[in-house]
Amino acid sequence: MFRLRIVPVEKGFFELFELASSNMLEAAKLLEHLASDYEEPERKVGRITEREHQGDTITHEIIAKLNSTFVTPFDREDIHRLTSAIDDVVDNIEAAADIMLICRVEQPTEDVRKFAEIIVKCAEQIHEAIPLLRHRQKMKGILTSCIEINRLENQADRINRAALIALFASPSDPLDVVRWRDIYGQLENAVDRCEDVADALQAMVMKHA
Amino acid sequence: MFRLRIVPVEKGFFELFELASSNMLEAAKLLEHLASDYEEPERKVGRITEREHQGDTITHEIIAKLNSTFVTPFDREDIHRLTSAIDDVVDNIEAAADIMLICRVEQPTEDVRKFAEIIVKCAEQIHEAIPLLRHRQKMKGILTSCIEINRLENQADRINRAALIALFASPSDPLDVVRWRDIYGQLENAVDRCEDVADALQAMVMKHA
Amino acid sequence: MFRLRIVPVEKGFFELFELASSNMLEAAKLLEHLASDYEEPERKVGRITEREHQGDTITHEIIAKLNSTFVTPFDREDIHRLTSAIDDVVDNIEAAADIMLICRVEQPTEDVRKFAEIIVKCAEQIHEAIPLLRHRQKMKGILTSCIEINRLENQADRINRAALIALFASPSDPLDVVRWRDIYGQLENAVDRCEDVADALQAMVMKHA
Image (cartoon, rainbow over all chains, first blue to last red; front, side):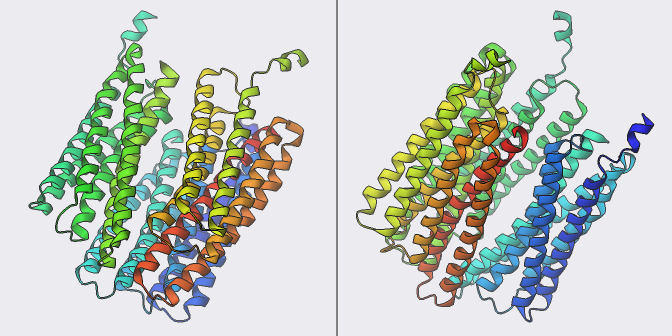
């Protein structure tokens, strides 16, 4: 029994999950930086796009490993779900940053900054939770992060709602409404995808802890 | 064999499903009430938000039960799918109601009322179908409700299409187009989620009837 | 062993998949025709709607076969996923065509034509890949189509991004922004759903090749 466990069947997966979450946290921080200091936005969005490409590479590596590995540390569909969810967070962070370029905003609003902060906090929670997957006896600690991410998602909902109310309350330019609804919508998507990561982690904990 | 079935392993699930569908039907009726009599909308939307919170509580209870129960009356993923779909219907009803507040509509249109009626009819079908899950020999009756929900969804599609055509045909104010597209879109989402419930129910019937 | 394989347990599924992909390719070509020659759009969109209904019929047939067949040539959930994804492509092609009628566009833009071309190319790749499912030793050829579809999806992303940038750069009429964002968004959805088909095919190859 003990000798069998010496074979490091699952080792690579944990490292790849940690690489993915570290890449996601980096993307979130770049978004926060963009939102708080909107100088040279093209260059800054370009750096987030690099994170997105890096995320794709890590995702493909995990999927390839999943297909070539006979014994996996978690159910295949759970590994797939976690990996896709982290990938989606990065994609949505990139889309949220890029839509500001596309819509030619002059300055992110205070609400964009609040959203970016929440996304960083969610990414930090995920990045702290992921290494706990390695240790069955520590897995329950992941649930604390999941609860916190749910709280942050509710907070993002309230920010979005207040921002939209303000937008419709004094609509100077209809195009501004279109523009900011898009931007807030993308930012909210990024937070929602963080909640998907939390759901995937929670399912893994439930089955294994 | 017979003695084993006396153990009520699954009892709680059926009751929780029925609580969830009853809560969803209540939310649908509150939406219809809001659409047909748009007085004190904040208070009325507030009551729908209460249904949404109640729905969350029921959903969490089902998921917790799923994780602590060894033998479940249906496949775990089917229970999960049904529960999430009902939860999503309530979330979308709440979002549809709330967006009218956010966009500051003065009066819901006739199309909003038609949508709300369809959502109530879908919720009634689901609420009638759910108790049939308890009786393997009655499960096929669920399929009749599923067919009716599909018909209602097609009807909602046609309402949405006609409403959008009218909106683009005489666009007095571009903001109105933005506003009503959002509202109709959310209402259509609520109907689409009812169809997801029907699909989940259908999958359960197919496996067990 | 050999005699067992003579029993055509799975025969119908492959034929139905091929019918579905052929119907999808036809819908894509009708969209391209609409985009390149916008005469009598109602009639042309009507023909795409016929493809959508035909797609529904084929989808229902596959699901019914899935529920009445004991031994299926692939995992049930993979068959379900592939079938839904192809159905979604056709639905999205129809929605993209119909939104042009709804929004009352006078002429599709050059970007609509580029999108339609990409959708035809994706549909051709899928239509070529599907028959390879019949032969375990040829299945790896499907991966080549999947890679090409991924490339086409990236190309569609770039077209969408450039089109939106142009739209926000010189917004004469806010309604035009609303209108074309919708249309490009639906066209992008159609391409994204082609990528879902590719993902479903890839998962089937990974398990069986």
